[in-house]
Image (cartoon, rainbow over all chains, first blue to last red; front, side, top):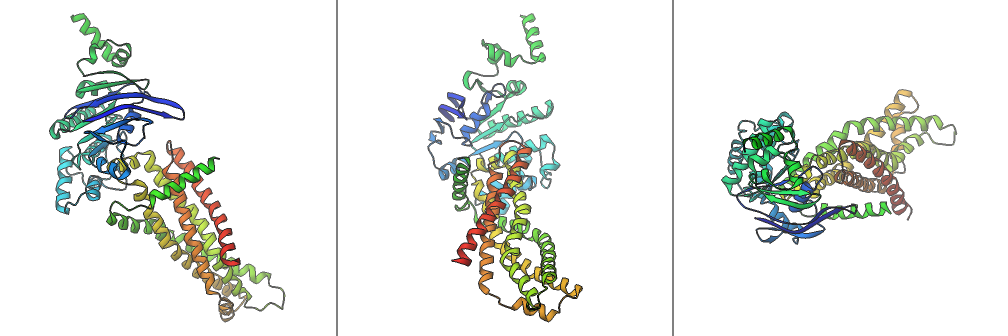
Length: 254
Length: 247
């Protein structure tokens, strides 16, 4: 479980996050949603320590991450996997070397054990046989899957995914969504997904935190968001013509 | 006051760079890779520059020697002293500031804007130490090698130019090269090289690591890295000359 209290953050005097409290549950896909520029990514970066929050505390299973020094944070970070918006694969390394990297850096596993783990992770994301490809030789969807394989290589307890579907076609996006969902349930980890994609929300949103103007605006799940009685949520959910059409059809039925 | 803030940030960065690596095995491996990229790959440009500069120094000196009071071996002596004291350590370092500095700044800058550095940090890797320390090690190990190589080639270039121009004989040129040779000048040149190598790589890494934005900003950071490290070399050259040759 990840808990955070009173998290706020400013850049150059402009406040981006306003005293946010929330907790993300284990074994569930927790979504942080909201329009672009509302502070979703800043919140996620505060949670993983890429940004220092101005105020507030972040707890990973009751361990105060905010108060830790660099060495202690490094221990927690080895329990965190993260899939970045642009995948952030090391472009000078092959797919296999990317997945191997954290294992070689932080574990005392033998070469055979590392190879076994790498093969398992790549197989888990349906990339077996792609070991020797360079990231530049992989499609966008493949890069995301390599990113997931690298994120789960260290058997993380927490998985963060920043806009996992950006730049992907709808079919590949669903594959990635399902992969994140399956991994969360299979390994019983706490997953946090930052997205503004309504398809993802409806596909995998076990728990949803809606951020608006840097504030915690609404919480719920993929079922309750459809009927949320809130103008900001409504304009977010029904922003596309497709969703508007669905609403109209549902209203006609009832 | 911005330059003071930047300088403070640079000093703080060095504090993180010079910490214990997560894995020594990775550090040594990465250092060897950097020696190849920063050092060995710079050999062709250093060789080309040194040979031609040595040739030009020798020819210019020979063409300016009109007084019969000057001994003929002066050409060799001036080529030797200007090469050892200034040309090889300083001019080659300025050239390396352009080649290596821009390369380091753009490599690390690209890793920053494509979130690869964030990925390292999330894994628990000390990204500054992992990326910058092997580059500094490579520069400190291989820049002196490049400079000694440059000294030799420069004097060789001077000899070839004089030989083909028929301005002096090999014996007289070698006599000039060996005349008034002060071994401390080699110590001075190599000490300067170590400082310049450190400045080039650390300044370029600083600009690359803290870049914000996209590819355009990486380009700007790369240019700033070259300009700042060149100015730093010139200032350090002046200070070191005062300290080592005149005090």
